Length: 106
Image (cartoon, rainbow, N blue to C red; front, side):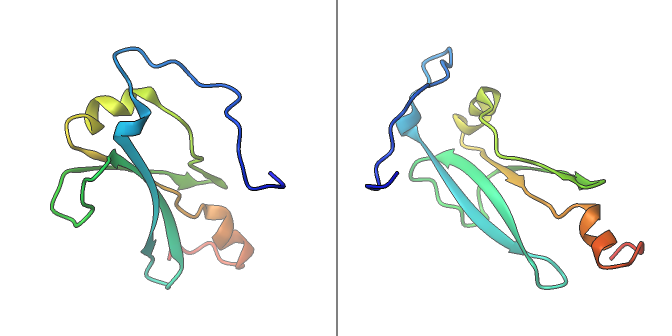
């Protein structure tokens, strides 16, 4: 990492003709009602526009101090290959409100 290069050490095999060059991964942000930016990881076909007009499968969880981590899931490519963008919202968990000293849902 010192010289800015990376080396692939292991690659998970995905059956069914998976070609990683067909896909693009992005991190975008949504703004919550309180102004905090919520990161969202999105995978879609390379060249697809994320302009709000195409289909999207959005998944998110954030409760009891747990949130969704980024993970490679080969099952999502069945959707992505059909033009559906797949997104995981990394929602702030309930622990954030506990640290602020409130139990009220905001």
